[in-house]
Length: 242
Image 1 (tube, rainbow, N blue to C red):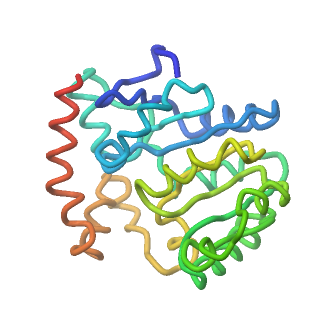
Image 2 (cartoon, rainbow, N blue to C red):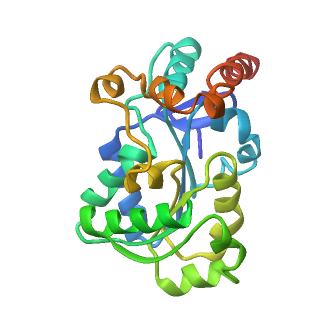
């Protein structure tokens, strides 16, 4: 990714400042040209846990966009302006599908088997896409054999990887060169939302950028460190590499 006016550097990560509509158009154009894009949603957790991504950010096929209020705060402190839009996999993925002039061929990787099965139904029946394959993140991946060959043979155009940071980012980097899919995305807890296993925050909390607080209230033991100590580490790293 070359430095441009629409790139904001956050702790050495070049993060694209754009709108959801413009990002969807960009990805679909690259897909139509046969170009592959690995899309990563850069939240505070990614900045702290995925420093290995820095070895790949100059690859034109790797794209980072901002996710969450933490990146906005850092952008305001470091650059005096906020990002153009708040982008996250949960909201952006359905928008991307909706902007495509035809159903896309989707392969889904990650999640528990029962969660994945319900998420597949959601993508097909509610979002109108063609799921050409899936593999859960537990026994499925351990017994999948050559998962690259399975995805390649499926003709998937979009690969959604839901394993959480930093596992999904490592998986995408390790497998993308063996796949012909045009769009690979790390989508975190998206399959849980689609399956109805985890609720989204109320609309008012989403508008106020407090979805993180809602998730913390649901899973305090798992997320407390992420939203306390890791936030402090994130801010320290932002100023260290400003």
